[in-house]
Image (tube, rainbow, N blue to C red):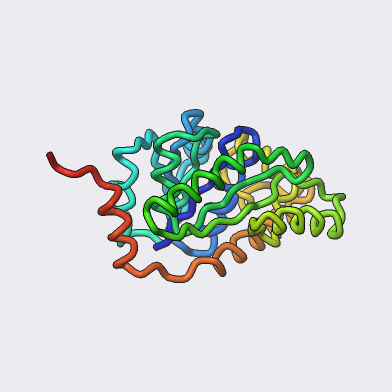
Length: 238
């Protein structure tokens, strides 16, 4: 089982969209996936309510710092992936989720590159690593990238981040109508009507590429390491 967390201390970075695209694509591929919706706005929970049953996918909401490690512990033998969607903030549950993650994805808009929220998450990751003596794998994923942006422009952005020691996924999330409509209409990219949603095939290809790349970053987590993280996160008895 792997825990993937989407985090950016600033809202509007495309974090929830990235979480949903990733989770639904992993489920489509036959993986058992649970989304822990820790965002107070509960966009993914609302999507789940209008979507009904989605094979291989479950959404759990009302996540708290106390319940988060408990959910992960209960699900560790039941699912293949846990995807955590956090609020656009820097608080206790964000720090806890980062420490429990096998991979942290930090969405940053590829157009404006206003990365202040991402920098706060990167700083928090460094603090946790230094304090807990652990390594938290993390990467930036560029989001809401205009389809007309050239490969050279994206490489320039990646190079600028890499110069600061930040790993960037090769697969950006391209701005697509399907990613907006999925929250309004429910369902998945596979259940949408291609005659009504423009470039739906491109959106599906993008989701597949994103999930494929992320899976290459996720070696099977040793059970001992997972249990160690959970034990440190659970409250101790008085």
